Image 1 (cartoon, helix red, strand yellow):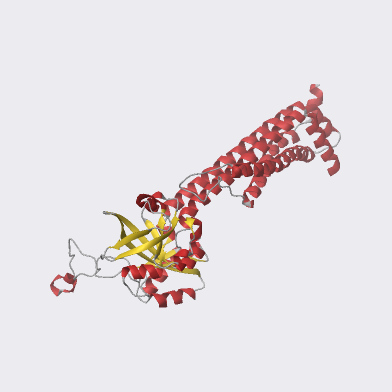
Image 2 (cartoon, rainbow, N blue to C red):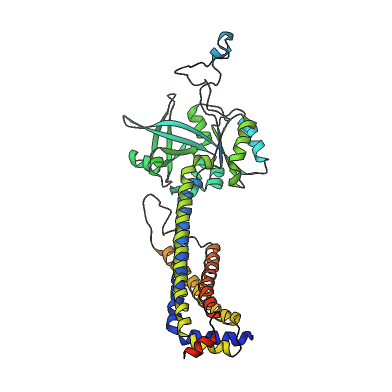
Length: 419
């Protein structure tokens, strides 16, 4: 049958019932708009929340963990070998937190094709001395430029310049919560005491705010050199080696390799943040479920409208079949109607969905916990638009397929005799 003729008949039927057609198209448009807007917003929110953890977390962290000795002296006594020995109050091994031969480990890792960057760090508990009060805290001695390159450190420095840690001797960037407790302003000098009793005055050159209040109350940053000076250790003293990988999914496997190769503890990001990743997955799953449900509901609307159209156009269908149209031709006509509604409504939905996303992206979102975020986060990932239009076409195709099968089986003789 002539494709142009089928197209013209489909258009005539669409125009003849233009109100119902418009309602169906609006249903598809609304569904796609909400699908794009909801998914873009939820994905942007997930990205924001993930960034608070993942952007500040190494893919693999190498460190020395203080643990009890696996082999106790009683195991070396011949009389007790082959028995289960129950020992209480086992003390940790007498080990230091320092990573031995850290320089050679870093050089080896930099040659690893799986590694995109290395950032050494020193972590030490301290007391911030304010008058006669001592506040507990943690100082991170960092390679400023490496930390900024791998973890966008400067984005979390809300006041002051991050590079001052490198340029200004004996300087510190305080967590915002710790600074507020001590009423310390930029340019002030604070006194820090280590667990070993070493004291040092540090100049405040900035504030750090991660968005996690419990962290910001205790955590602060100095350069590696300042941290080594504070602890009174040599310039090769390192407690942590932070590794960024080219593929984050390889972190668990590579952590096992590094643990055996370098004789240190290796913690991968998936293990460290398993609960957080589960929450992100659930939020994304809910977004997809709601969006797809909206599209299915729109599909049922199209199905009902085409069903009613078939009942109202029984005479027209009978005439078409009596004049030589086959059941497949009638099938094509109604599927063409459904796909026209789906494609037109879907394209409008993509346009309005982008507009809705842009509107959400402009809504102010100001919170003291996230000073670098000014508006609601939105993800404009093209895959959302691709999924939206594909699902729109698939849904409307099946919404038109079943009514069209019914129309293609109509016997024109029975319809004409009934009249």
